[in-house]
Length: 112
Image (tube, rainbow, N blue to C red; front, side, top):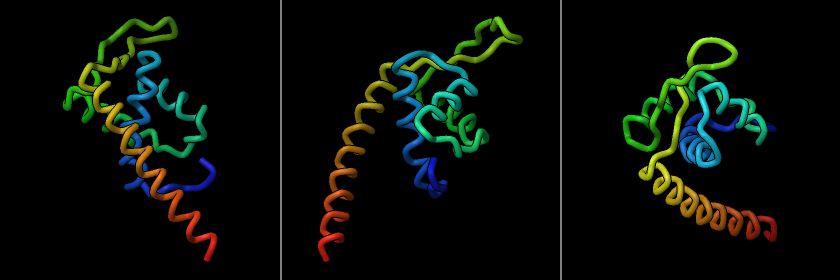
């Protein structure tokens, strides 16, 4: 990320980001971190991702399955569930509305 984003704000959107990534393909924790790096989310603390994955699994948004790895020990891959798909769609709708509102405020502010 270009600059630090408040951890509270980041935690609020990180779940949606993870769900969108998992829609594309199952991934393990470190793999999710590398995927986030591709979108300039490089300052997401690795210690934030794993507790969030545990919470998301408890809520039924994702399901973790241990799988063998060609490069070492087994890894826990996460798969999005139907409930997770629904949550992802809700997140996208809320994000689009928030983005619209904030952009409107920014536009009005720039004209003052």
